[in-house]
Length: 434
Ligand SMILES: Nc1ncnc2c1ncn2[C@@H]1O[C@H](COP(=O)(O)OP(=O)(O)OP(=O)(O)O)[C@@H](O)[C@H]1O
Ligand SMILES: [Mg+2]
Image (cartoon, rainbow, N blue to C red):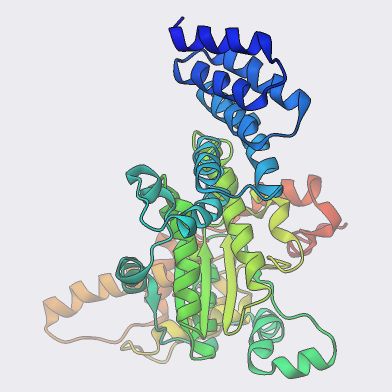
């Protein structure tokens, strides 16, 4: 052991209560990598008094030993007691990153940078730095150009779903238009709507139409995109998506495939998923105070995989089942999708009757198939001939409905995991007695 350490030990024998001297020894031990002995000395100081320098020493040892959670506990104590210096905040940031608590790390790192604006660290900056100035502009612009749309459809382009449209209107559109009326009745504004149901039945389409309905912009993000493309900095990017939405109000912010978050917990992205969930919930909660002009919608095929935390008040506190279109909605969808195509007088009653269990997407596929065979004919004869009811019926034989499969698994959740009647609508749809 080096000379310096030996002589410090000697000196301490004569004045064991000399705290500065003991800290000096502890630091020297730490610097020469005698972590266990250094810890003993710091603890010995702490047994005599609450000493910030000794605590910081301990935190550094815990960090070096990979005991990140213990390290954070000590640092949080320091911060709470008012020892908010750069070194403390920086170590706290690093230990939080090690624990994958990215959202928290971002907050602490921001405070650290306020104390030391010139500081840079390639790794931390890439993951945590909330960009400012031109850098932020660039990053937000990138998100804006790839995500912000201006929809050209509205509610009248969506066939059926009258009750759902009404609910969206009352829950999120009217509060946006008349906040004062809601306030007058003490009705809280905020929170989002989660749409669920079988594939192809118009969840995404309806979300887009909602934006068109209020002449708002539309941002659609799939959580799978966030997880796949932005691994490592997904929390930061999620934050920026919310930021872009706030800058583009009025705006419908739509989270598609929101089940990706739930699903991710059981696969290898486990911890990444958990922290993204927390970041997501944090962003939703922060809207409560500042949601002016921002509507939140989400969609999923598997709501039962979604963390219950999502359904708390102020978050996705309304869950709506989007069933396959009923007979009259199917007639409407046929009409809507054939509106600009060359058709004969079509018998919509027959088509809608024969297309039970077809989703909106299935109906589109049927029309597509009918048109393809018509195209061949038109090219041969040199003139476009109008489409007939018969041809659409033939096409229906080539494309079978795709919604049944979803119900066979949904039924089990509705029967056996139907907490507080959450999935009663599925049972109703299937005519199963509750
Ligand atoms: N009620 C409807 N009215 C008009 N078009 C519809 C309707 N339902 C579905 N469609 C058509 O079907 C297509 C697919 O619907 P959409 O993508 O919204 O389904 P989804 O419920 O989001 O499916 P998934 O669960 O697979 O994401 C839409 O682009 C739209 O053209
Ligand atoms: Mg969809």
